[in-house]
Image 1: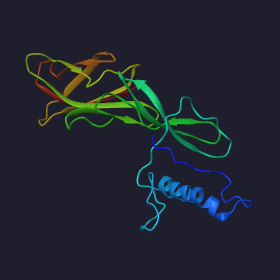
Image 2: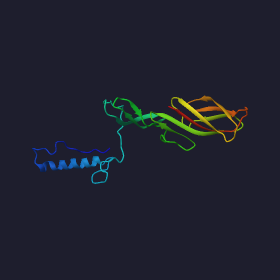
Image 3: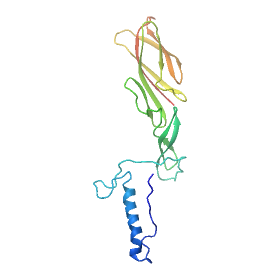
Image 4: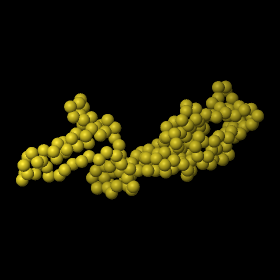
Length: 201
C-alpha cells in the first residue's frame, strides 16, 4: 500500500518561509495524491466523487457510537472459502452481513438452469431444474454446493403440460441435496420435470 508523507506544523511561523517551502510542497502533493486514491482528483469533472471504494479489513466488528452507521469489511470463512465480506453496523450496534462467500467462483448465480446466490444476512439461496424418467418416480437432486448448517425451506414446482395430475412428497432433505417422490394420481410412474428452490445457511 502507498504511504503518503505529511509534515505537521508547516508553515511554522518562527521559520523563514523559504525553509518551510519544501515541506509545504510535500504536503500539498500528498493531499493531491491521497485524494486521487479511489476518487476523481483535482482539475477534473466530478472531482471528489468516488471511482471505487477500497476497505481495510477489520479484525473485529467496530464499536458502535450510538449515532452513526458504519460500512466495513472483514475476512469471512464459509462454504470452504475465505474472502472479504461486506457488513453494515447501525449506530445502535445492529450488524447486517451484506455479502457472503459461497465458493471460489463468488456469490453469483453460476448458470441459468442450476446455481446459487446469496441474500443479505448470510442466507444462501439455491435453485435448479431436474427431471426423472418413467422408470422411477424417485427424483434425487444434489445442490450445486452444500449448505454449511441447514436447509430452512425447499420448494418444488412440477412442470406438467397435460391434464394429468402429480402427487409428490419429499423423502429426505440434507445439507447436500434432497430426494422427492413424484407420481401420477393413478399411482403410475411418470416422467417429471421439476423446478426447485432451497434457502438456508
